[in-house]
Length: 247
Image (tube, rainbow, N blue to C red):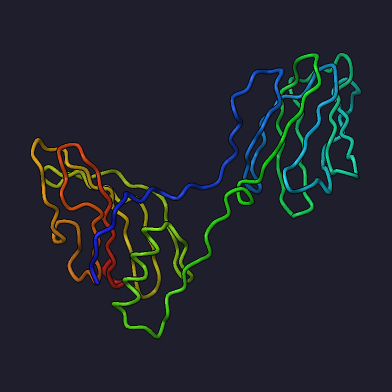
């Protein structure tokens, strides 16, 4: 049941908006999660086109300003579903802000700085469409608990969601156990089983062989250590499964 894994599992990452570093005059390519914020730059004197990859805008929501010099224009082009932004001459605000809803049901907040004379293009990619999450693992409830624990170890190693489990990706402060630095990276919790993903570093000056007893709580059903032979400074991952009441 207990087996060695060959690479370190990383924490799952909440999907967030990331603006690629580009010169002000270049096209802007941005990846953003649903309900995320798009930070971009729109032209002060020309049009700015905002286009979605594999999607199209369905609606735009913005507040009308009381003064013409504080308001901007958003035109929805229906053929491609793009948006065209323009600001009036003498626009007094440093940025434009609005919400866009897409045909696939995603909602993005746009917060874009105003600057430059040339036309701009902003290409937005949805993070979930670009990098879809693997399907959730389902542990057979009728299977023996040991088999379910082994399935949970595999899911934690592959960073998969597991049906019926709450995943807490909130790394805790590491603790020192002799020459080992141990950090809880994530937890998988259900009414019957609990799993931990641990980051383990050899901070000593000599090689170490990791034993299951060093990383597993009493009553552990399954323990898997990616690399048991740690050289000084090396890091590995360990996966521990216990009955839920053990956490």
